[in-house]
Length: 216
Image (cartoon, rainbow, N blue to C red; front, side):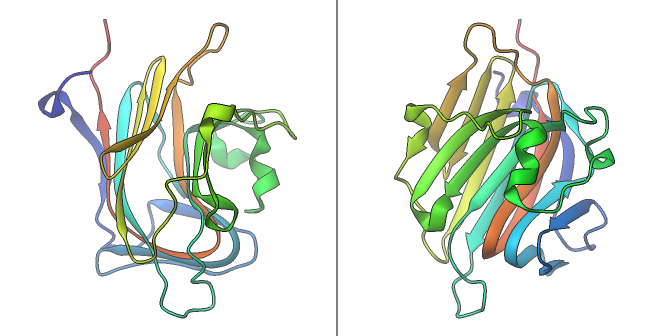
């Protein structure tokens, strides 16, 4: 992969001009508000907040996320989760042509990479490659971790890289998952990105997406 100077900026959001670039799927209401440079996601149940435009080819996504723990009704410190390079097997050309309620089981139809950071009430951190089959979310033992987990009030700098055969997930510069597709697996060419959480409260900032040079 080329250096930072070889990247090309595809998208950014500093969360100072509203949420028109995002689409929220909320299982049981809640709020998704952009103000003062922060996307505030405060929800009682499941929520997926999708960037409306897809990204294809090798790309990198970065953002900062903080679990709010200030005594609010949803300040649970759990589930800093992510879908990326996502398409819905029912409508692969248009993610939004298929309805999803925000409930987690609705996302089994996705062809996507997924990380659940501090999931299951902040007891697990997991990587999955969804295959679009309801009831099947394959989980390899090496991708089922009990650390690291979320710390309340800590601003995590998340970096996702989808670069052909290789997919990586970093938190504060630490490589948590490094997935190389196995024989017979086809890398996902790209798709849509979402912040995903459930019954929690997060602040998200400094969202950027970069195109990466194609590998020879």
